Length: 296
Ligand SMILES: C[S@@+](CC[C@H](N)C(=O)[O-])C[C@H]1O[C@@H](n2cnc3c(N)ncnc32)[C@H](O)[C@@H]1O
Image (cartoon, rainbow, N blue to C red; front, side):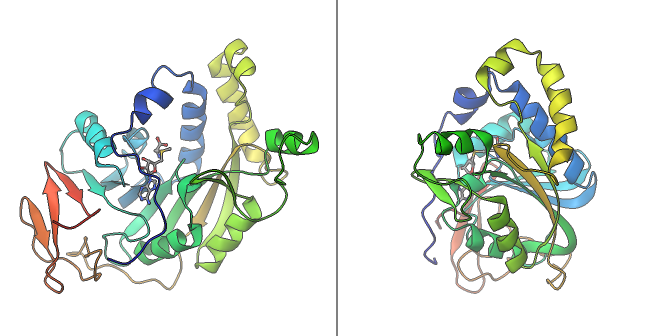
C-alpha cells in the first residue's frame, strides 16, 4: 500500500462518552447541525461522511438513499452501527482518507466535520476527495479556524507564540492543526473545488456563557450570527460549502468500492471479504463493517 501521512488513531477511543455525552456540548452539537443543514443539499442518492466517528450526525442524512460512514476507527464505527443498525442504507467503512476505497466520481454529497484538524496533509486529502466526488455535487467542510478571537487575544497578550494571521496551518498539539480560512480556500480551489458560502459557528464557545445563558437562546443567536461570515470569520469553527470539480469522472451504476492498493473497481462481494481481481489483495468485512485499513 502507498505510504500515507501519519494518522491520529481513535481505535478503542472513548470519544463519545469523554467528549460528547453529558459533557456540556449540547450547544456545539446543535449549532453544527444548524450550519450543516444550511449548506448540505437536503436530499440525494449518495452521501459520505469522512471521519464520521460514532455517527453523531447521521440522523441529519435522512434525505439520502445511501450513506457511507467512513472512519479510520473500527471501534467508533461499531458504536455507530450499534445505534443506527444494519439496515443497508448506512454503509460502515473503515479506511484512511488519504487512500479511499471507492471508485472515481461516486459521491454526490461529501461532509466532513471536526476532523480536518487531524489532517497532517490536507491538500493530499482534498486531492483524494476530488477523485471520489461526482461532478455537480457538494462538499461541506468544517475546519478549526486559527484566526479566532481567543487565539488573537492570546497572541496580542503574548501568551501564544504563533500568529493567528499567517496562512500556514499550525500544529498546536501533535496531529492537531488549526487552519486559516484563506489557506483552506486556496487548497480547495487548487484541487478543483469551487468554493462557495461559509458560515461562522460556535460564537459562544466559552464556559461561563454556556453555563449562564440558556442553550436554546445561544443556539438561536449563533444561528443568526452564522451568516456574518462574509464580514468576518473569527469563530473557532468555520463551515464552508464547495461545489465538486466540474471535470471529474462519473461512477458506473454497478461500481462502488475500489481496491485501496491498486484502485481497481471490485466486482465480487463475499460475505466476509472482498478480493481484488487485479492485485488479489483481500479486504475483510467484519459483521457488516468493511475494513480497508489493512488487508487480510
Ligand atoms: C474528533 S473526531 C470527529 C468525529 C465526528 N466527525 C464528529 O464530529 O462527531 C475525528 C475523527 O476523525 C477520524 N480520522 C482521523 N484521521 C483519519 C483518517 N486518516 N482517515 C479516516 N478517519 C480519520 C477519527 O478516527 C475520528 O473518528
